[in-house]
Every structure is written in C-alpha cells, then in structure tokens.
Amino acid sequence: MQFQRSGDGVGMAKYAAPSLFQPHRARQAIRDAHAGKIQPLMGMYFGLSCPPLARFTAPMGFDAAWIDWEHSSCNVETMTQMVHETMFMSGGRTIPFVRVPGHDHAAIGYALDAGASLVIPQVETVEQCKHVLSAAKFGTNQNGTRSAPPFRLIPGLTDGLVDPKRDLHQNLNDQAAIMIQIETLAGIHNLDAILTECPDVDIVWIGTLDARVSMNMPANGGFGGSEPEWLEALKIYDETLKKHNKPRAGFAMGPPDIMKMLGAGNSFIMCAADVVQLLQLGSSLSLAREVFPAEKKGEAIADLPAGDKQISGGELNIINGMEKLATAATGAPV
Image (cartoon, rainbow, N blue to C red; front, side):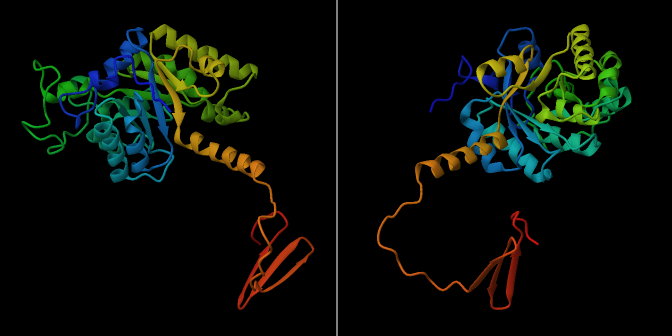
C-alpha cells in the first residue's frame, strides 16, 4: 500500500507557523488552493474521538484533519490531544480543523488555543457569524473578544512570529482559518448578507445532510436530491459563493467519477473518513462468510453442557440458574 503525499513531499508544512504549537497559516493555504497555486486541501474526517487513530493516520500525508467535536463524545482534553497528535506526528504536514459544538465562545477559544483552525456549524444569520468571528479574533480592530491565553505559547520558545513586523496576536488572527457551515434554507438565503458583513470567513461548506433534513426532505445520506426546491437552494448557494469569490469545501468520496462530481470547484475536499473506512469491515466479514462455509474439519467432539433450551412462538428462552434471557424473533431483547 502506498500513500501519495503532496507533490513536493512537504504538504502543509510549508504553511506551518514558527512553532507547531501555533495554528498553521491555513487562511493562506485555502487562498492558494482557491487560486490554483496548489491542489485542493485533501482532508481526513474523524468522527470518532480517538487520539490513537489521529496518531496512526498523521503520517499518511493528508493536508487536513477534521476533528468532529460537535458530533462525538470528545471533551476539551481529547480534542486538544487529537490536535497535537495531528500537528506533531505529521511533522506539520497536516492542518487540524476542529468542528466546535455550536457557537460557544469558550469552545472556539479552546480549539484555537490548541493550535487548530475552526469549523463552525449551523451558521444561519449575520449575527451568529459576527459572534463566532468575534470569539475567534484578538483586538477591537477586528471586533475581537478572544481572550489571550497567557501560557499556551512560551515566550522565546513557541511564540515565534510569522511576520516580525507585527505582534504575536496580530499574526495569530491571520493564521487559523474559519470555515462556516450553512445547514438550513434560511442560512442559504442569508449567505449573501453573511459574506458581505463578515469578510473574515475564509471558506464555506454546505451541510447537505442537515440542510435537507431541515427542509423536510429525505436525508439521502447527504448526497442531495432532485427536488425543485433543493435544486433552487443549491443554485442560490453556488451563485452567492461566486459573487463573493469565496472558497468552498465539501465531501468527495467514492469512485473517481463520483469523487470528481462531488468535489468540483472545491478548495477543501474531505476525501476520507474513519467511520466510512470502518464500515468496510462489514464487507470483509461478508466475504469471509462466503469463502469459508460450514464444512467438516474432523470427527465431532462431544457437546458441552449448555442448559435447557426451548424454542417456541418465535422466542428463544435460555434458562441457566437464576438468569433468563428472552429474545424476540427480530433479535431485539425483550
């Protein structure tokens, strides 16, 4: 098995800050991908809050790792560990992005303090977007309300400056990227106003799964649909991004033709996911069932005692001392 890193073998390390404790210059990486100076960022999605998994995949050469804090049992410590596993075990080749749980000011600060870029879910209004941008930025010049962490970066060791002409916090404002997710029809209709009043948004992702559910349509696994209302919503979304020349992101997995269709025009492409890869274990099991049917390997060995068994009326009752397990014909515990 071979893993293809970026053409130069460096990946996102060329956008790394002077210290891996700081966020990458992810904002610039996205702009360069949008302009065609580099390939789209190829990302790995972590739906499981599992630091060893982040460590295992870090050397594989993904440009980005999406750590899902919104839809997992992740806590602050686990999120921080997964960010650091991604940063350090990839040698800076992979940019960690954290999808925070909602728009909480503290959660945004935790993710940025860990060294990650941000994914902000469920952005629907200008006010919501201004709130999250404020939480992510330092200083009133950018309407920032982010608190400066006093000991996350050690003076003289990990607080090196990308641009020596500006101070640390001015630099940090331009390093971590902010991706917003538009996941409702209202968000799609408000996107023009959001991007007009919130230029610090770096990239936009349409959450097709949530959007379709919110529009009372079949989820279709997030793969969209052909309903006129849905197609009209996508048209508005596409036209708005073109109007503002704003980079876009999304999933693109599957066979090459499907991948190309889903990822067309994206500057950030989620091309792999832990949960998707694990689902393939079912195929491995099915194949093994076919390859190895029940067949005699030798002479029968006497059965061991197993208690009384009665099968009747679609139920299997196994009586063993004081315990009784009744299982319906569907396999669900009664």
